Amino acid sequence: MVHKYDLRVRYSDTDKMQRLHHAAYVEYLEVVRIEFLRSLGISYDALEQSGYLLPVSKLRLNYRQGARYDEVLTFETRVALDSRVRLTFRSEIRTADAEIATAEVELACIDCVQHRPCKMPDELFEALQNASS
Image (cartoon, rainbow, N blue to C red; front, side, top):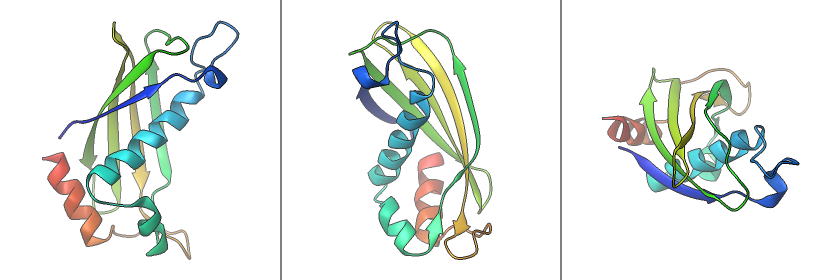
């Protein structure tokens, strides 16, 4: 499954050249991941309330060219289950004209109390399994 999500580059996220600042991509990718889960019927808030967290364990961004203020970015994202504990979101980030970046974000499922790795709840695992095939 490919999840598509559009975000407009906000002025507050740009640098002196009115280009999207490299650090803003990390925040945008988080928005995209939460919306991806929402599209699967998974509320991140409900996941946290049931005792699970999905912190980032690895992040890789490859920048190809900049995005300008007010451009619409399209994130095309796929998910891969690496195990019952780890998953990876892979995104291609595009403007209307070109691919501007790619990203890989690995997450680990941990429990809210001890902050130790744990198996994903079945509902999350099954939804991700369906989305990754």
